[in-house]
Amino acid sequence: GGGGAGGQGGGCTIKDVMLDPGFECKFLDVCPQAWEEQSTGQNDVICTITDCGDPGAIAFDGSAFAWFGGELGNLTASVSQTIVFPEDAMNIELQLNAPSCDTDSPGTLSLRVDSDELFSADVADYPACNSNVWVQQTLDATAYADGSEHVITIEATTAADGAVTSFLVDSVGLIVCE
Image 1 (cartoon, rainbow, N blue to C red):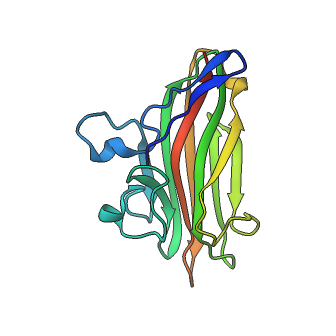
Image 2: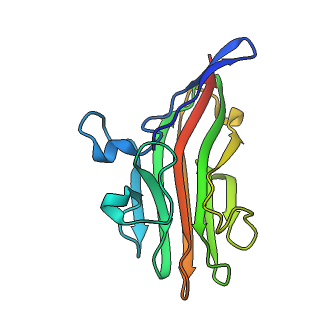
């Protein structure tokens, strides 16, 4: 997926400074891959439908996305990026889709900055489970707006034994007010 914010906001210019917000660089030779992916029990995390199969949804923007779960068994997967948070950083934004949720088995997706959890979605109570709808999540990032490097980690654990749970993430942005 692509992504990025732009425009005016309260006397400043709104800009997305995230590197590779839509995970496209893994599949392109024109940009370096900014996201590190890790998984236990799952194949690739950063995917396109061509490379990983059909998760039941298309990318929010572009053709790539991060796909967490989607297979039977106990899975843990993450993508992370180390990035400087400018002093004018306001929010982290991301698009989340959960096209399939096994609500009888545990499944959680979270976003952390360093070790602080800013967002969590659990299949037991995430309202958009099984809806195949992209939902924007906007998270306050001002506590990290210090001009220093921080690590953004998106991680999911799923334990599917009958049906599978799929969390899809796309268009992750670090929004600043310049």
